[in-house]
Image (cartoon, rainbow, N blue to C red):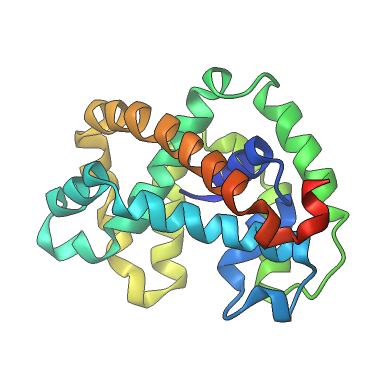
Length: 205
């Protein structure tokens, strides 16, 4: 799952939005670097990543990619899942997507912590270029993959993923509707089960 899904799941679980968004830019133990609330958000993000990667549908789709682009299939799938979430947003949240994005932007931008430069640059572009809104258009996903391929030579094969995604668009969409509700339930169960440990005893009061 990509940025939109992580923000949505953070909201769904009442977890720290900036912590969930920051997670990809943090290495090691987050509790040594951030407050318990932010660190717990990072832990939720990591749970989400591990859970979705473990699902049989995701494993099957990764094997379905042509061998020469299979190495980057996880990134391509993360992006297309965000597209389906944006496209079918009304099925998963009461607020319209632009209103949700406006609200989470306000909270994320209000966070003042040890933010890596790459994170600051990413969020600046994300808000200014309205990535989360643009995800509703599959062409925006294809363009994002192509841009990543240019910026990161090691991921150059991402540019070859759009034809595969386009050729399996409906089947991937069907998988999304199976996977995402399962992920929402699993994320909420994880948060409820581990909240006291992640945030400390005061969180249960």
